[in-house]
Image 1 (cartoon, rainbow, N blue to C red):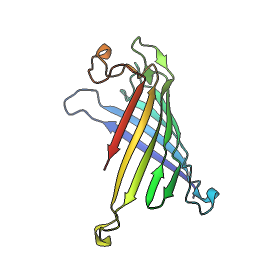
Image 2 (cartoon, helix red, strand yellow; image 1 turned 30 degrees about the vertical axis):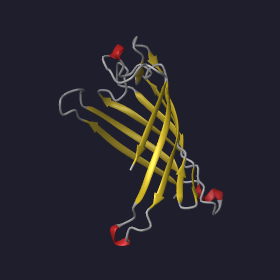
Image 3 (cartoon, rainbow, N blue to C red; image 1 turned 90 degrees about the vertical axis):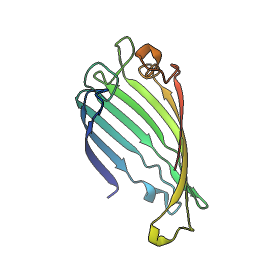
Image 4 (cartoon, one colour; image 1 turned 60 degrees about the vertical axis):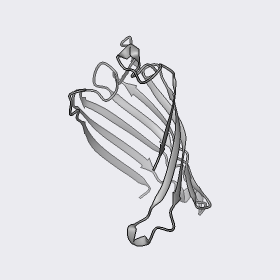
Length: 170
């Protein structure tokens, strides 16, 4: 009851044929460790997952490969605010990640961030549970991803830095 195994089959389609249709099998194992911490409301929420590229690419390597991910998302509450601090590392093998010179790279990225959530108590229960949330996540990108979507690879969005910030809210 504390372990959750989630198998998923993915198909990514491109309506304008910007990339070939990807198909992959993802297997995720997560552990609910909240009971280990008593009634503190704290949990580490660790997980591991592996994605097998079955047809075409999700990564940027030259052939179908395998993606591995490990992470924790410590969570707790501070008054009415829910806080989680997800930390994730992504790796690849068998050409999942490839640098601009075509070399296979094992390290993809490591990320760490903070997510804040506040339940809106003034919304009537008949409309469900509503919350406002925001997040900031820092990514350190390995050599196979630091130049992804740069001019060197035919893109124009990134400058080739190993560092990226992503902000979100809802």
